[in-house]
Length: 70
Image (tube, rainbow, N blue to C red; front, side):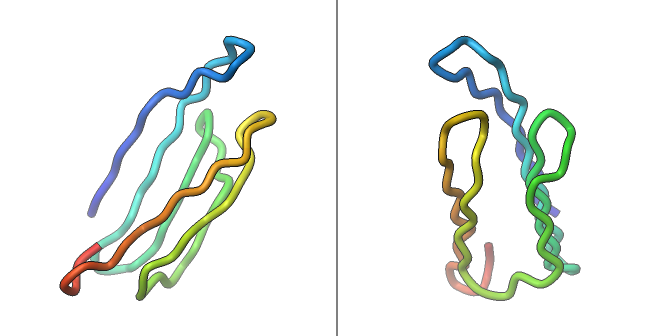
């Protein structure tokens, strides 16, 4: 299981807590902002890119598969 979190400050000073969870065995992906899920994917088997808005900003997150691992 891989899990990461970080903080984003937008141009207006608003703070966003962003998190990413990826289950090694389940292949589930969960992306959340301020503890609210914004992306749920139940079967990621290959490299995949997700696009979503945080406030007024368009964000892209890419989960890459390299040598059989994410």
